[in-house]
Amino acid sequence: MSFWHTLADLLLPRHCAVCDAELCASEHALCNVCLCGLQQVPWTDMADNPLLRSLWNRHDVEAAGSSFFYNPATDVHHLFILLKYRQRPHVGLHLARHAFSRLSALGLARGAEYIVPVPLSRQRRWRRGYNQAEWIARGISQATGIPVCTEVLERIRNNPTQTHRTARQRMENTRGIFAVAPESPDLNGKTLLLVDDICTTGATLSDCVRALRQGFPTARIHIYTLGWAGGL
Image (tube, rainbow, N blue to C red; front, side, top):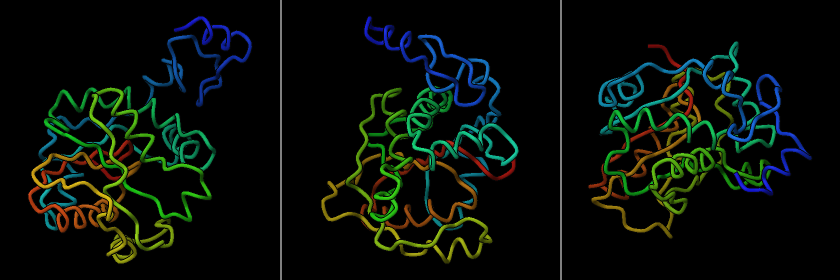
């Protein structure tokens, strides 16, 4: 921690996004007590888990993993509200940087050459000012050294929100909304880590994988989401 960061903390103390306690110099976004209290997804097999199984019948994905259970009654829900709607994207960066090391040790993103965040539509990004998946990807990049590539995918249709939709409606709502961007580098033969904030039914991720498969048939795909809204 530099002198200027220390001075800034003295003049403008930072506070935990969950309990509002003042953060010490080594803490970021959350205090260590709240960070340790978040309910982690316990999967230890990155090649066989509920997230990966949700895509098995649709696409060839090599590995997948999530870090935290997403439940409206938990602190994780509050953190995602801050991340997506309250102009606190650094929450996603710090959570991913902290949490991803465990899944990396289990083999997720092994050999990955690029991190690909799920894109927002231009309208939604303009309103929000940032893409939360990109900030999560940055946190992973800081933890692993794998570069983030935002030029790979684009959202070609601004679909309505997925909130309050059934699994079938989510699949229909996201079908064909992603495509490989014209400025994308050639990623055939590369290992890619596709990143999003939350997985509920896998509909958004499924269409991203479809687009990647069409553009890069020989790419190997891993998936990571910060939150998992399904069961064990």
